[in-house]
View 1 (cartoon, rainbow, N blue to C red):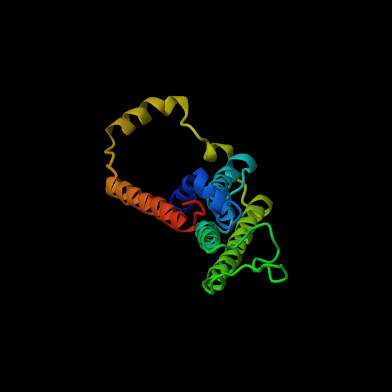
View 2 (cartoon, rainbow, N blue to C red; view 1 turned 90 degrees about the vertical axis):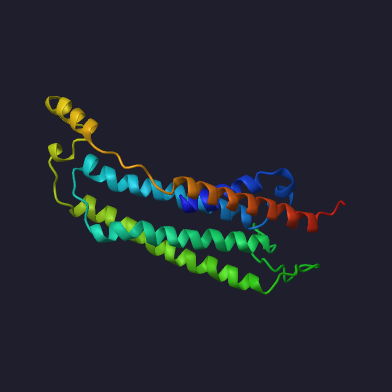
Length: 212
């Protein structure tokens, strides 16, 4: 939720505004957004789905379960740093689609603040952490498929047997369902965060817009 919505979703809505997009489209803010939504959030979802379907499709027990527990956190942390580092670098004017962000050999070299080195460093550290998380994922998947313990089909059935459906329905009806707490507060915090980020971008745009 954090990497997909709080980082990728909010930046996507902001970049989708035409006036802002004209300024930020060719900076690292754009790939930073996509690294949060696609490379981060969506990939994590498919990683979790892979862990779920290995026993169903290959009939193999998941190996290295402790690795499988920590792997999404390692990969998610890495991609969060990658996205934040790229977005922060893009806000400072770091260009994409160019091998030298400083344009050192250009006739009119770009002037970037010194903090760019910090944000690009965060980007690089996050990439290394994400690579470790990716290697952990591939290792768990291959170890499970090639060397996992054989699982009987009955042990991985998705639905209850027909004879047990009635009893399962009654038991489910009688169960107490706890209400989620703090959801409304989280929504309000997200709304305030989104509004602050969105209008801060317009404030920054007002200081850079060439037409007054």
